[in-house]
Length: 376
Image (cartoon, rainbow, N blue to C red; front, side, top):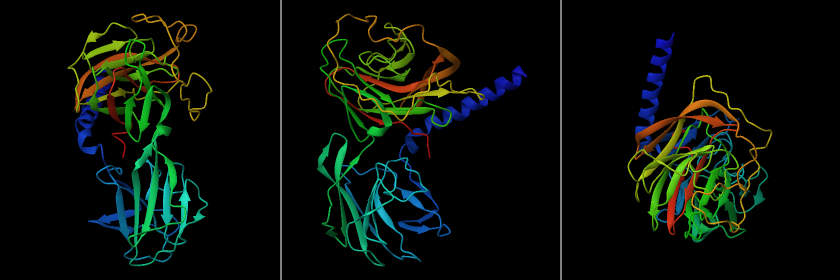
């Protein structure tokens, strides 16, 4: 039986490592349901009672801030919607129906802004009409942007200024880190060991979402960037890996830190342009111990850091939770650099799970994060 289990684990490792190596090719992937794409033509393939949805592989950006859709055939009802949604939007809902999405609906000319009830917005659209959607880059601030819609090249004027939240819903805790879409920027002082900027995901890794990545877009002054996993309520002024209940790969020295301020030689240093990844190899029978009855939907954005004693690798008695940290089953945590596995370490999962946690600590640091690079 032991031989069978070892063989299963070996095969599972090979499959997961192959996924990681291919992650560069799938980081941006189109998603669709009940839709058929033939070149640049999309066709609905449902039974008229179910929603079909298509999400493009890449978000709007500075170099591509606008797109258009031409209605070739309205079908039976003409229920066509064009807009913007988060990358992992539920594909059985029309754009605009769910939070953090907005869309112009052709059949009734209404605008749907995170709600199944639309507001009167513009004219209805028919066969041959072109619907356009874009963002004003100059208005992009604090994770929000202004969205515009057009019909046949003319901007729909009524209530065209719409504010929508971008990606901030993925983060449960933010301290001295500014989020703009998938871009995270360090905005702390960057002068001492306690000036850590921390970003922690709203949800822990699990068997369906077991891996995440960041790309270093600007290394800043010293590239004090750390990627790893930490318990919920991890101290906000501590790099992941420095305190108990955490593990992290640090870009500036290539060391692995596991619940200690002293790291172990682990892998190569990382620089601007490098992609760092972290994931968990869960046992086949893994069950998460939630540790409490708290609601994962409650987001906590930490206030501006208070003044603390400037001691190297201090104990953080005011930040650590009282008592011994409860630990669950052991899992294998692995780290990657540019799609290749750097190394792994067996660790015990804290009560409530391991949350993707990123630390930054020097001026000018910027990273782009994908919390779901292996998801379809």
